[in-house]
Length: 329
Image (cartoon, rainbow, N blue to C red; front, side, top):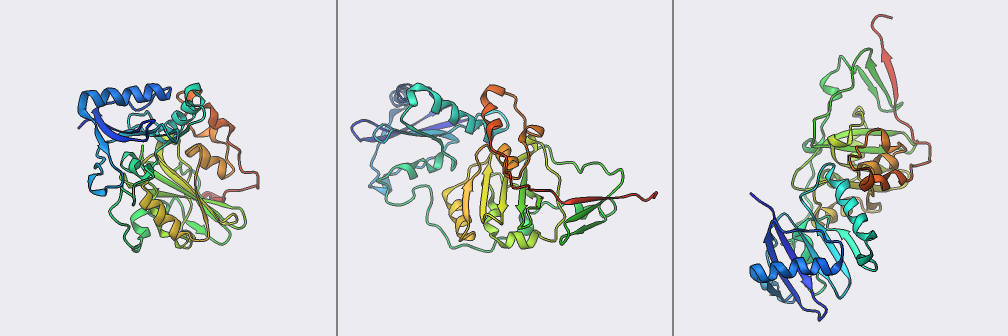
């Protein structure tokens, strides 16, 4: 196994071509450098012209990273698989870095959050979405596949949860329930009374936030479930905030999210705004009224410092009530 980088380039004359390189670089500090990277691969590997009006001739974009460089529309989309943790935040930090480079001023520079296989979706002449073979009808989404309950597994430590008063009973001396070292999802539901209830969710490594396809039924299904604590950034790979008063679903994921999954999520939440959370986990905490510094890792302060400027929700959001049960009293 090794990294394969895919390149799709549109030159000044409007012609498209594509190529690939083993361990090829993804990021470049200016458009000329990005074009030279792709051109070097073109000379070394032999690039192929791309006719977007001929679906049969479109390439199969296997590989784990890549970029699309459109010199006509001044557009760059990239996906880099070789990033340190937390990967979602670092990809977004890369985006912020490139936008600030003088050579990219006036360009649309964004992460290709759908991964390298979706780069062809950005070619305007492609008649249909090239990254997908059709879009099958929505099927039933099973919450049991995605819910990672934990309080129910230890009724002695957590003897009761009242979903009406939103009070969790915790036995005295019980430590915080441990998270897995990685691969967790977090779902926060903002109720109409501005209480925020957090739930742990399972993560699918192939697609981000699949559990949002359950739709508003997700809120009803979780209403009787006890809340979870909030993990550290290294433990949370993806999360979402379901804001009932604002009728908004905000999400992010360290894993790529295909256009198909996003369309299914958008259909499931018809009548709601579905938007990506800026700042990843830090943005999740800010959107639920919690300053992000307490649990967010910043191994590269310069790279991730912009997250400290994320506005914290000011509506007075509050967590559930905790009642300590002391057997000795």
